[in-house]
Image (cartoon, rainbow, N blue to C red; front, side):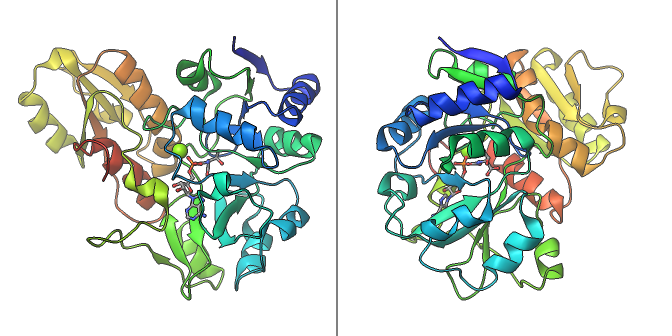
Length: 333
Ligand code: TXA
Ligand code: MG
């Protein structure tokens, strides 16, 4: 049975107890909900992979509640690590650093590096400190589906698979953290997120965006080779109201869903409409994107038209997720 309980001192204590006993628990962060297990118990890590249906070659992010928890997990601080931790932690920035021998292979998927972040969410921080051990946690969705931004999304995906979901309300950013690889000469963003390239540059770190895979190359971030964020419906990106109107004309309205700013709502369409924002802001839209995909999918839409944004700032993270949701191939991308 899966319990879903509102976050408070008692339920956080209960969750910490479960974690200490080698169980897994879903909890809110400022990005998306995570499914956590203590990093010291291989069977807890196994349960995470099992519950998610996650391929074992996709490593997990270790979540800490204090910077001093990082030291035993790494060989050394790579260049920029401490500057970035001081500036952006707690917050949506995951740092990939050389792993110490203490980090279990099942967490790193056998890589020599470990991804670590400190979430900016009091429930997550209180839970990790009450547990007393860092917590490995991927997003709490079934593998391949949109990440959960509400406790109810976790329940949809994990009912009967995990003992407890701590409900801390809707998450803030709505897209997963930026993953920054510090193990190479040039810091490389493996997954764009709310800490943007521009913000990293302003902090004096001249990071570049991972250019994607060349033929025959192994991905640096194993998670990136899998299909992601995908609802059952087909997803089509539309850049403006006129493109939307044109594409709608070609569809049978009954099975169409639209995910866009309020004033894009067509007057003559009988399709489902989910307002992503009132003003067309990318921040608002990012926070609601995954909920919108789930709602329209659940409402029976066969094609979902989704508002696109320019590929910079937070728009880069938003478009990264949206392009993956829209990808039509099976399995690997
Ligand atoms: O916002 C987030 O990061 C959320 C919340 C729960 O913290 N977590 C999350 O975890 O999105 P997950 O497992 O869904 O995504 C982790 C990503 C994957 O693409 C994985 O391949 C990559 O981080 N990753 C983990 N360890 C890595 C490593 N050592 N080297 C390169 N990439 C790594
Ligand atoms: Mg995920």
